[in-house]
Length: 351
Image (cartoon, rainbow, N blue to C red; front, top):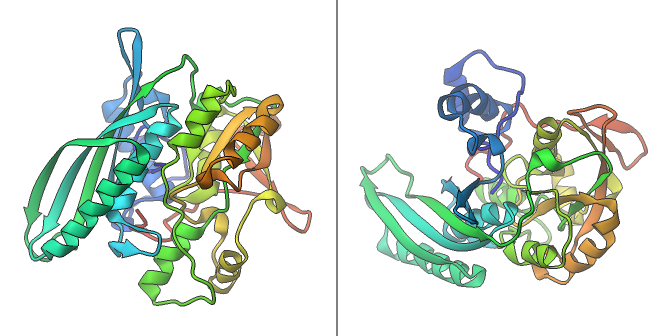
């Protein structure tokens, strides 16, 4: 999944001065990007890490594999459309898919707080079993640790995943180039708003549910059809805005978006207007962006629309070299504005 805590990605955001404040914010936005750029990346720097994708691409003789890991601390554990177990499986499956890999195997490590009801754990594990089956992966190894009551907030999960790359294409942010177009797989903002409503006890006229879903099938369909994908990015923490800013900075290009083309459900848009949020910054758990040549865009949209999780696929922008590293957007009223990631995190513990 797209995650600023995943230090295979890095940016060069404005810096804050106090590392205690950085840690207290718990991740996301430019704060966690500073930790990534200044602490993790220099310490572990190597050619594989330098790929800056959703996972590492590993060569094993003639075969290439994708490898990724992520941790899940979402609160609450259960929410409309999913739970921490579905997130743990789908998030890691989606990281592998964004590498252009076919997900195969996952590990699962559980950090349990003393006093967690076994019924709660069983419910989460069952969700993971069902999600793994839907995503066509197996959970093949794992670990369990218990911490004292009050030290773990119920349940945390770490997953790692391995997938096989069945093609010779290089899919990474550095391959994005002027002339590319940007496709989006569906409407944005539902996961972030769902978690926010659960925590705040908010009720909307219509039920808003998380979009949590595995994304490998539409990605593999694009690859099998010969679509020349340059980059894939799932739009999790930080939302569409952060994903675009990261890619523009890494590729050294300008990305220009059209606000009218970006699908946002009316109920999500209305809730965001009331609460003062921008849908572009809200987390998603079942949405991704595709960068590809203009000539492949129409066929790619048709392929994406054939799959439930990407049925709302649309073209939302283009890539140029006019202002390298910048993301801009034509708004619904026809003005232009700069799109940036948040300096902090809009909602911590979103995944």
